[in-house]
Amino acid sequence: MRFFYDWGCDSPFWCGNDAARDRFGVGPIEPEELGLSAEISEQLRSLGAWHDTALDWSDPLGPSPWPLEECERFNTAVSQLLALIRTELGDEYEIISDRDL
Image 1 (cartoon, rainbow, N blue to C red):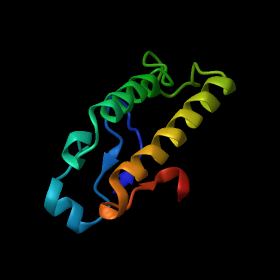
Image 2: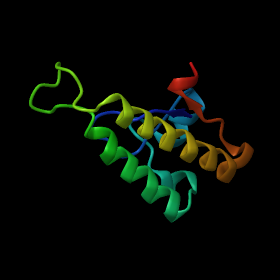
Image 3: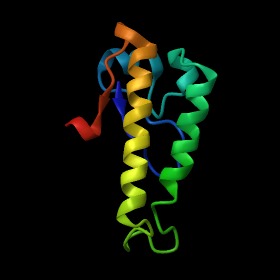
Image 4: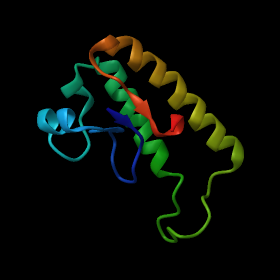
């Protein structure tokens, strides 16, 4: 399972292999489909909304409106939540963050 946020998507889960595509299809995978708790699902959606503020939607090719500190806060929040997700899911799924590639 790949883990990354994409613009306009509130779930960061994507199929990373044929087995996942056979089970979940294409497109983002909702956290509930993975059996994640309501609390983690809500945190994921909040981070997705926060992620989308990193893009200047009126000038998508321009610089991000985020200062470096905001980017660091976001990355820390994602790393902390990803650790919780890996613990909650256990060995059932291998979660590969694009940050780890």
